[in-house]
Structure formats: structure tokens, C-alpha cells
Length: 115
Image 1 (tube, one colour):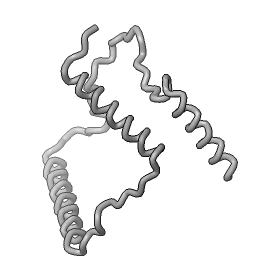
Image 2 (cartoon, one colour):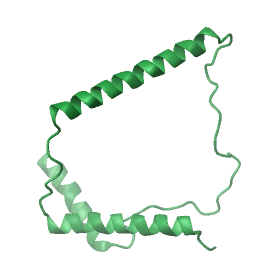
Image 3 (cartoon, helix red, strand yellow):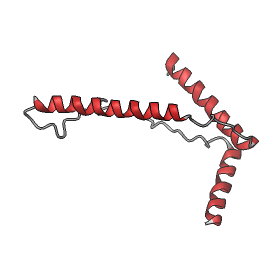
Image 4 (cartoon, one colour):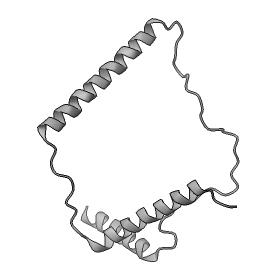
């Protein structure tokens, strides 16, 4: 079975993210992050959110005024449900990585011991 270009790029990105997570756990470096948000930025986000919610409510009211049937349980299935997979996909990131498995078990042990 040959993978498409989209699948290959997805797998490459997934592997790079996986490697970054692994390196992050090993290196223990300090992440600076973004600077604190200014009051203008926060107020802008709040007004955009309020405008979005008001527009959404107004559109819903307009649709409800012209609706004459109940819309409960009218969701439609987007994916076909009759597909039979021979092998279920496995996303076990620790399958072949023994160091990560050991580290995960130590983390679980430490969490339980600290409780």
C-alpha cells in the first residue's frame, strides 16, 4: 500500500513533533513564551467575541422566525459507516522506544508515590 503525498507530509510532521517532545523531556530547557497581553489586546478580543456571539444569536433568531419544524436530532453522518478495516491503526508512540516507555513508567510511579 503506497502512501499519498498528504499522508507522507502528515507523518513527517507527526514524527518531527514527536522528536521535539522527546527532546523537550530530555533537555529540560526553560521556555520563555509570549509577553503578557496588553489591555488593548484583551479589550479587542472581548469586543470581537461579543460581536461574534451577538451576530450568531441574531442569525439564529432570524432562522427560528421562519422555521416551522423541529430541528432536534437532525445531525447528519459525514463519514460512511459501512467501512470495514482489516487492521486497526495503532498510534502507540512508545511501541519501539524503550527509553520513553521507561520514563513514562517512572513518571506514573512518581505521580502515584507523591499522592
